[in-house]
Length: 220
Image (cartoon, rainbow, N blue to C red; front, side, top):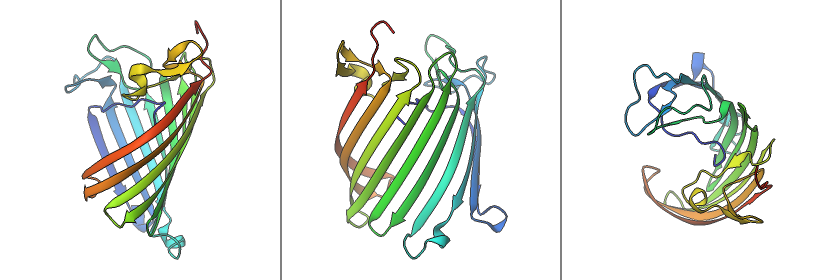
């Protein structure tokens, strides 16, 4: 999600599916709270990040209409949110102590739909809520796909949202006080196409996005 930054971390991860012969699946991880270009220290002073995931594959319940239907819930917890790790690293979860996300993924023939909702509670900072909806359609099965995405996000405090993407974050979005990288409401719409060379392992992507950041408070 554009509003909740979660860089790559050093840690361990385990997952599985068909738990006890059911359609449930799970995942669990333990990571260093340091975001670095190299491996994090073996005993980081800035704590850890815990991640737990549980989901359910309900394809068999809707197999007449869909070839894939799953839903899952993910909880991420940082023991030391909002702390700076060092001059060359930054804390991964930044100001968020807990991040809760729910998503559902459905495929039916050439159609696909991914819906995700996120709630992140800030520590000495704003809480953030976000929802994104991404429908897709294969023009050429397995090769050429068109994708739409709509996203809305809001914060509980002024300037509680921060632009993290490589393009928006570098320039900001135009507003009353010039180009802003913070605000309290964010909306975006994306239209693009994917050409797959080897499924999602190798593909070409092209697209355009419109984004708007509102609610910037000067001096906030």
